[in-house]
Amino acid sequence: DIDTGKSKLGFLLTLGCGAASGTLSTLLTFPFDTVRRRMQIQGQHFRPEERVTGINMIRSLLKSDGIKGFYRGITPEVLKVVPMVGTMFTVYEMLKEELMS
Image (cartoon, rainbow, N blue to C red; front, top):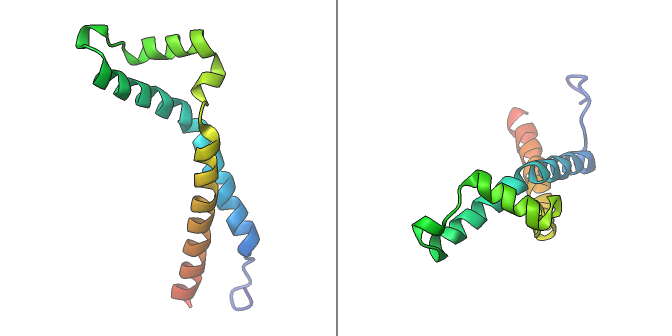
């Protein structure tokens, strides 16, 4: 910035940082979402005595599919999150700059 002397990231770097943070957060939280979704589905299709706990769901998923099972379906999620969070970061930074000036 010419007035304050502070450096700015720029459009592409801000977009890239948003995309990277969205990807990282998805990679970290997706396994929990997978377990949550499976538990919700079992709640709709199984009698209460047939349902398993979260820990048992994790064990079952690891046994049947391994680590890959926790990430099944992550591609569409990443394709959704990357542009969404990248755009959100960029818009936030642009609006912040406009409102501060």
